[in-house]
Length: 311
Image (cartoon, rainbow, N blue to C red; front, top):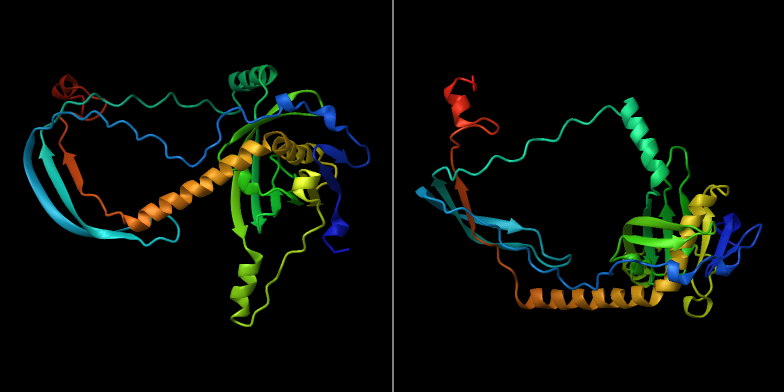
């Protein structure tokens, strides 16, 4: 048994919690464990509507050509380079309305009224749990995850899963019915990386270097055994943190087909966009700027200026 496996403190298979005491799989109700919204399939969002622009009265114009280098539209593609035309118009004041005033300064966090309001809200609402997690997917079959529970002094939970965590992209909010019978809402914030072990080993072998492969504990096959994970490091008494990880695997058990379908759709959409950009390299766009001098500073009327209020 590996050193990593010697530190196993928690195992879950398809919603079955195997520890000092077992919790039956039917403690979750599938119809109440779900992703409530849509999952992105990689299709681009509709373009934003064009902003309403005033009818500028141009007083003078300066035109200049500039060589620019912009970031590539996708990883692995060349930078966007070219010469653009910069057009700068000096225009008459279009008399735009002042922007809204800044919000009222926030009260001090220890203000009694603030504390009372917070206590009232806590009594009425159950706030979503923010799941701050990073994951490294190896060969699209095993994932090393690191979950940092919120709260001072709580230890990071590190473990392995037989789920490809690329499937947890495309959405942020989900809910799980917990063992307490309550519906718990979560917001997922995840940093994700992928590693091809064969490719990594091959690249290092060219330089006569050895690939340091991770020690992955034995996990059942996802297709035949269902979602499973192993906690390798963390606080064994932090049941709330373990419940978060278990909830993610229960979510996959219920929503896995939809998560996998949209993940594959995102792969195809990315490949199609990459092929299009290679066939039609983008060029930088020309830029037009309009500037003017306001008749009065923001927040002051012309009458105030005349009365000397601006001094």
